[in-house]
Length: 231
Image (cartoon, rainbow, N blue to C red; front, side, top):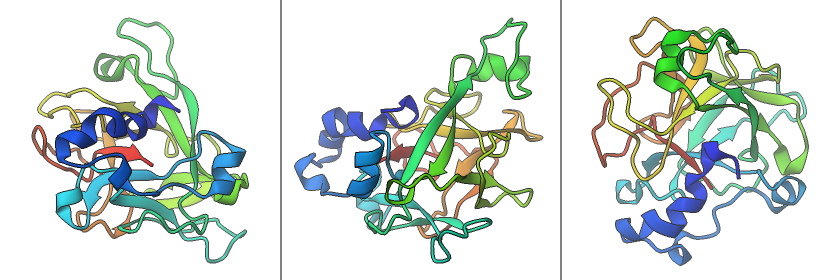
């Protein structure tokens, strides 16, 4: 399992009991069998927003990242959204996180993807991923990309800075650490914020297009559409 979505495993082992949920009650909310059989890293990204809200922080009930595959295999610019039903099993929620590198530590004389010393000081050692849609295990060649309008769509995988995300599990200046081993996902492309980046965000309703925004502090233990895990 990629570290970006390690919470999918750890939540079942340690965190769900804290929320009054057992692994058995979490249900079979998983990617399609075909995708899982083709790639053991196949998963469905989820954010910490569920319906009902009492199930927030339960990856089995959190809203799932969903691509519009209605025009498959013509997927360029297909909308990527969040759906309260993370168990559609129609290939639209089959994703594979592909490791692209690691943020250098402060003082490093080398860089990656245009990151700078400020990034190194905040995210040094964090891993970088892109998310590819692998519908029913089929390598579509399309990845989640954030447009210049800051919304999520599918574009041909290119490891561009608008397709890459830094997985961050710790606190940041003015921001509490993600809860229950969820992660923040910082878009690698730079943004005019003190943290240097916009952060991947689902809609607060759990239903709507994926976007990026300035990271907001929700406080320890509180659910947030900026916190990510997976099934």
